[in-house]
Image (cartoon, rainbow, N blue to C red):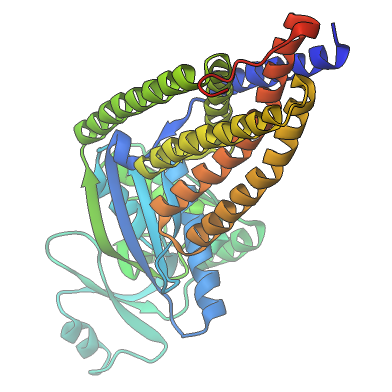
Length: 441
């Protein structure tokens, strides 16, 4: 038996086994339109019109939001740029859960500041100004409490003692009364500044400000060095969300929710079910047609088609792609192109056989001549997919990605795998080998 043929066969088997192991270890994730969930379009309100500034702010925002959703346990959430304006993000959250909490986590800037209190509380801004002779001093600023209910006002020093950027870590804990709090650790430089400040202001009030509103106004009871705690959270969930926001860092700009779309899980399940039925029916029709028309050569094509589908799914899994309805459309189109590739090869072989060439020579010439045509058609399709990926929306990009990967695997299976299958057929028949290419073959 030909050693080269055996090596090629073992290579195909090894690739197939590797693809199966990849799928078993890392199953393909379903997209929002298949498993259900929420889709949010957020606009980053960036100051200025510089395209470079907008790009940097949006990218920084995307990275911070990814840290937040990962810390929240939403590791499958997708956050990516969206639209032609350059300042929008598309957030896709699989599963329909506590959407209000997710939106709060995404929209909160997480800008923490600690101020020295100069006066308060006051019922109205006018009361605060009256105590300072009718005008709040230039070096101070007026700020309201964040708690619901009656709002109270305080006069704060204009410059904060520490900011969120001075924090090294933040986490959830409980205080002596078993109430949830958010504890934090400071960097070495900030710890030195905070220790000096608290030592000089024992017995005075300080204000913890989050996103421009006072979260709490504690009294400094002792010297605070490199750690402290933030009170005011009504539930453990609120304390956890604050810790997540502080750990991930403050957003460079405010975020506005532009659009929200919800896909129920039942709709996604129905789409998967119908898609599987349609795919199975189409695949069965294709296989039956190939076997009927090309007989044994059709079996070779079916083997190549099956391996093509396996390699495509494994490739999508390796790249961390999410399978969506447009992605399924890309898979179906890939199946059609795979069949078309095999038909082109078979017809080329038939032409060579009609010229009187031997079976071995006809196979070699048929695959060689068909290969150039296949490369041309595949390259032109890849170019089209590049434009779709560059300018399309995320679903369109998913379609383009699936199709390109399918084209790569198709070129391998239709040329290499199919040829090995034909070589095995000839090796088993010996010198009297004949090719059964079906009708008019």
